[in-house]
Image 1 (cartoon, rainbow, N blue to C red):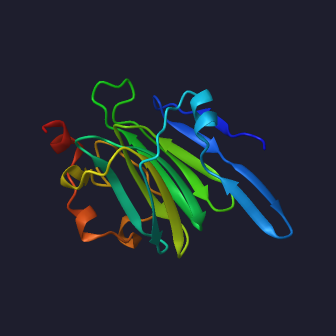
Image 2: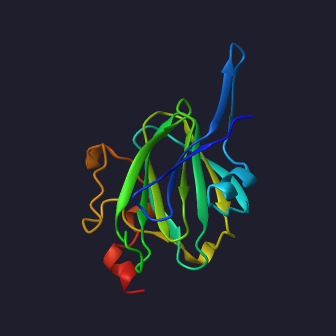
Length: 183
């Protein structure tokens, strides 16, 4: 079985990954993770939990992370499409407060490797989009938090008008990057 393609990004330790995909007249098969292949690419990832979220079109989720015991994440889309965003929030990183975005979809078979110390969010581009999260590290409910999607000090250029976006009440109350820096 052919391997994965790992593209190092301009944000330190983050990767855009082309997953293994095989398809024929019956449908298709996508592999999103293989421990040895990741290790060969320099990514030490140990799966602790897997979950999925379903979103309608124009939903923005995030930018989420854990303050204590941050998780590394491998995020993929198994139905629909998202404009997926990662932000380096490691104060000592040379790419601190920088962000990147890529389209992940069921059709392109791509994933983001989101290192520990990054915030993650996305805009759902289609109704009934299903995002798959594979996480390295234990979930810490007490410190599960995030930074506002529209923080001007980060400056993410979302491909949607703000008034057309759908958010949870929780996400509308997230902190700014300046508040994060004071913690």
